[in-house]
Length: 168
Image 1 (cartoon, rainbow, N blue to C red):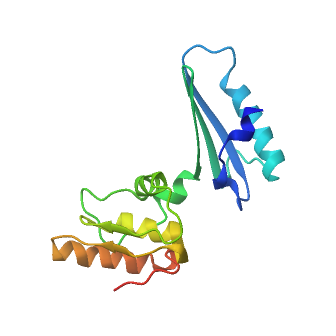
Image 2 (cartoon, rainbow, N blue to C red):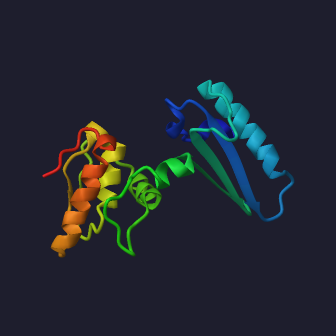
């Protein structure tokens, strides 16, 4: 019954899914029991096939003592490898981390972003990928002209992923 309360918006429009559960603490159930219950719910509610290897969306259930965290994410390698970066530095933020940061803001249509230390431009690029035509103003800047040129090169290389976003 509690499964109906889950916010699994990330599953809408997906082609397949996988559920994984990690637990810590003592429970009267096993991880596989949680995976089976949530998997059945997702399959029935969203009419999606489960696919353990070729999944598009991962549903992750973390159970720590009596706390439960439920999250969805695109297949891991899709996020971390989706940008072919033309410019990187030793401190370049990974796209999957930027994706999580932006999702934690719960962006809505018209969402605007200023990244004053944009480095390679990962956060502005991920914002454009997530929001598409719904993005408001997305600005990345940095004090180093070389870094700004690198961020611009990265954005050019990722232009196909950033629908509706324009480069200055």
